Image 1 (cartoon, rainbow, N blue to C red):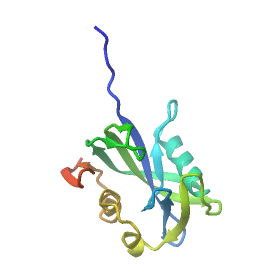
Image 2 (cartoon, rainbow, N blue to C red):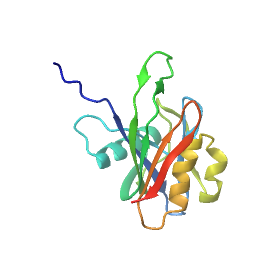
Image 3 (cartoon, rainbow, N blue to C red):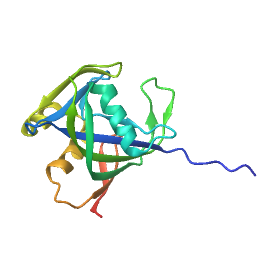
Image 4 (cartoon, rainbow, N blue to C red):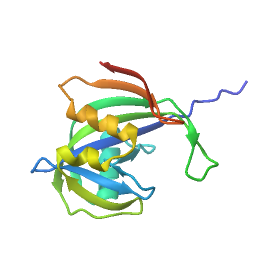
Length: 162
């Protein structure tokens, strides 16, 4: 009997702060403002993946400071092509500091901007990204674990401190 290994995306996200306390947001090609991040590639550790993703999406170099939260999106759905199945995801969000570089766009982003902490939620429309940013605003030193599904509608299934 052939063993089938589970398919699970591991991804990282970065809440990047600059010297003025502003937060980096990027606008994706699919239309929404988010904090930068993406999938961890084969052979990468979490920190390397996050540094690479932020650089690719915004043009800047960062330092990863600390883990913020662990998130499971246990829902599955179709990719933007309407054909490809997107598996469940394990996401780890980190707080980061700006090191150097100038903001730019990429193949994945149409805009990048520094936004005051108070205005970030005015930019972000996706409920899951809003919930993840709220963890940053509410951070008290304890890591948070959240399970949610994003489709057919956003629904938090578990939200605990660990």
